[in-house]
Amino acid sequence: MSLRDTHVLRIYKAGRLTVVGFEGRELVDPQGAEEIKRALLDLVGSAECQILAVDLMDVGIVSSWILGILAAVRQRGTRVELYHPSEEIREVLNTTQLNRLLHVRGTCAGHDDSAGTCAVPSEIPSGTT
Image (tube, rainbow, N blue to C red):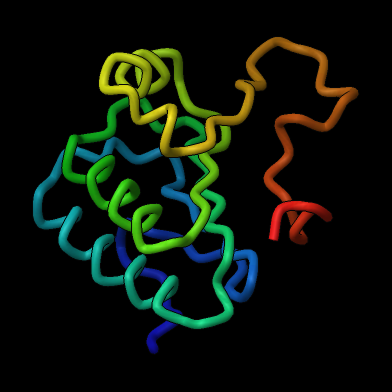
């Protein structure tokens, strides 16, 4: 299994809790989607990965390819949590009802995060395994 960053996907942590991000890129290129698909499937193919936390900070546009990949990861049994989705991404998730399959966390823009709902986790919270 290759745990290397790709030109699109950044891997912050791999294991039972795997944390990835896209560093604010717009995710609309089909070639990039294929690269992301291979990398994510390698990551979650590990028997260790139980939760995939996806940081969407500063990502404005996500293609249906990417959403389909995340849905496929979820359907393979890995919990998928989306952090910092833009309002546009939230609308797409609501319209497609993918918000029922993918766990969407609060946006952080201009709001008090004293409850810690916006931080991408560094460990698996108790009761989610």
